[in-house]
Length: 194
Length: 111
Image (cartoon, rainbow over all chains, first blue to last red):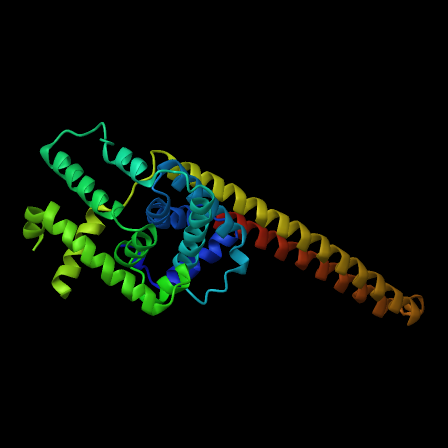
């Protein structure tokens, strides 16, 4: 998984990106954009806004790449920018109905669905999205960072600015909530996975 | 919560909770970020280039001034001519190094 590349490879890519290397920039953008989008979507629950935030965050990050001291991973620094930019947008745009936009997303069906597996996967995704939409946006972001972006508790503290105890507490609470939803909605699926 | 359930939740989330941006978003993002980074890079290089030119002019002026104070015109041809050759060879070496560095930067950006 590209996400777990060794730190040195990341440093090399960043050094080349600073010099304007197309390949290095493309590799960085391709590696992190999907996760950055998931984090932004977790806060905003709106695809257009999330794309705008990811775009802003990447431009901010690359503009101030010289200020990045490499005391942490680039991904941690980038997700911190994404999270706080998304949070600012969320606070300035609280009128957006979170549940409405998420359920809009649930009805999204790709046009290239042809096999039963694809339909099944789409259904599973709908249930998972539905379970995640029940969480508070901060909890959703923490869950995304921990389980999808595979960030440690310390890294999540750096990204969100919360204390370790708060992160652990929110993770435990969200896990319990998700477990409840998954047991109800995806009972058969969970059994298949186990 | 036991570890098995945690692993299961992680597996479910990694398989089904990753959000995909719209088609073409990555391509647009790549173009914008590349353009922005190159613009920043060239701006910074322009500043460094101007600074380098100023330093070089100052050094040449100062050295010429010192040579005249020391009596450059009074030097014998056996000292004066090698001095001129040395200066010319240093300038040529500098030009070669600069062109090599420029070529390397262009190659790195294209690889």
